Length: 92
Picture 1 (cartoon, rainbow, N blue to C red):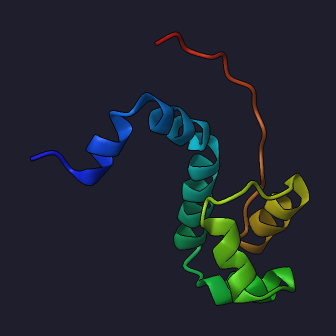
Picture 2 (picture 1 turned 90 degrees about the vertical axis):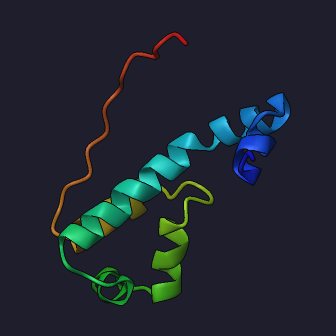
Picture 3 (picture 1 turned 135 degrees about the horizontal axis):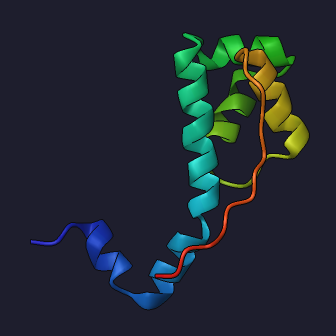
């Protein structure tokens, strides 16, 4: 029996929308990994950023793209440096 996710992704329109969000989810995973590696809670990061835990949760949710300034503030709060790089697209 296929999982619900597999069934939904079999629809080309759903697959296209899902794939379009990949960069946001990749960024969210990177932010969460950096916070976890630093041994910090969302509340800790929020305090260091001068914001609230709910804002950090939203940033880490992958829904929407935070500004570069916000990513830099987050990186600083977890003792890291934000780096942007361009990579060539791979052909499917």
